[in-house]
Amino acid sequence: MNTDHKKVVIFGTSDFASQVSFYLKQDSDFEVVAYTVNAEYNQSQLFLGLPVVDFEKVQDTYPPSEFAMFIAIGYHKLNATRTTKFTEAKEKGYKLISYICSRNSYWNDLKIGENCFIMEGNIFMQSVSIADNVIIAIGNKIGHDSVIEENCFLTSNIMMGGFCTIKRNTFIGLSTVIRDKVTIQENNILGAGAIILKNTKKGSSYLTVSTSLTPDPNNYIMDFI
Image (tube, rainbow, N blue to C red; front, top):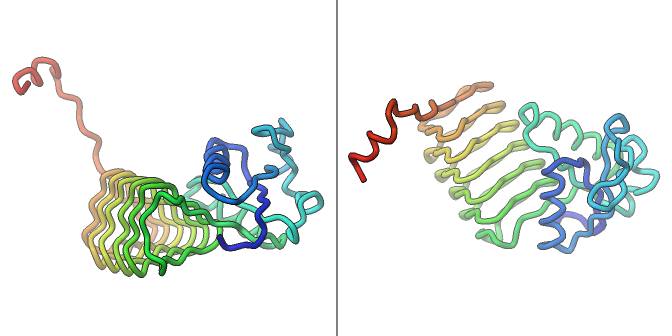
């Protein structure tokens, strides 16, 4: 989307890298030609039938003048690992592709930065802006005039009202609800099922309690079915 280079080297050989490869193959005009990891982790030299080259020397075989890159790292260390590799790839001169699945709903004013990956089933209302290095999984609703800053990771079934701001380096868990005009400060963790009705604090975690086990589940449930 944001580069003329259609041949792509993916950083990473994880399950997420495999998932990224599937989406790009099935739903884009990008061609994955190789993978790269740091030399100390390059054990197999092959991943999904393609070469794995040392990141330290990737530019020698796949120069940034001819190839683009995507950093396929998830939310490890609250997105810090992905952010580090994003910066290192940029320093090598690579353009970092972004991908948005064709099975999303969005207006033509949607803004997306570099190294973003947006899976299917999301609804983006008008005037939404997404900065660099953001991962968004499936089935979220992003309200109008909302901003998602750099290095965030959004999981699934998130409901976000209008005029919201998600500050950088934030993780948002499954089925989180964020009221309109709320700001989620940077380095936040919103756990699965969190309900956020007011602005959060920087570097904070908002976690819900897991549903407890019913003491005698079979007999208790039988009264209702």
